[in-house]
Length: 290
Image (cartoon, rainbow, N blue to C red):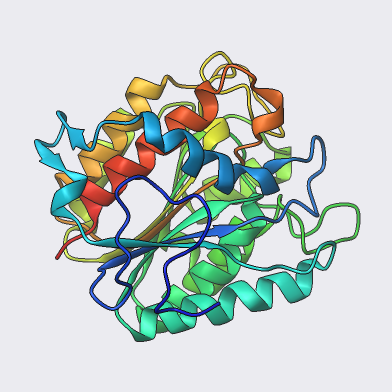
């Protein structure tokens, strides 16, 4: 994929055709090779782009428009189907290039394992990195049935790399006993809720580089049924949008973000991908600084 060409397929609404002049880059990571329940999130990035046409470019929450932000949609990375290890290498190489050109990476998944090489590369550039992880699942296993490359392991890998006390988890309501014990002892775990604990934590992150990873299944299945491992008891889309706005209004320095685990086949109403597209809009407008 060339970095100076516009993506020839569907692009996120109002995307620029000028890569060089763009501050942020949207890219897709269509991988769902290690999911433990329902596959299909590899189709998420494309569908999020397609439904974005239904969005207004203006955000009344932030009183800004996508017209005020310069961003390029690079399309989906070409990942070798079934080869998780090589796919992660390709993602890491791509992110390294984006960061070398001072772009803000905004990734669309795909399963949550795709976040791991992104976090690793962002940490190489920002060694004092903090991670905000918004999800239904702890994702803190060391392996899943003997396989360390699993969508249940990326946050454990991140914690071991950047230090557990630099990881802030919100909305978690599913995991093993061992995962919860590990989180309580080593991370900043805020289970079940997102917005209120996030507001309390954000002053601690003032001035720090922050990477934001959002698993769409943090939402209750009534709001987002289109995901591989839906978990009852989640938050509303209103709360998740408010969380993004809280980060936007803080002094944290967000240096990248992703939204993962949108699996369109399980949501014929399209509400899951519509929520994800709106989150992309709010992240672009609120978190990407010129």
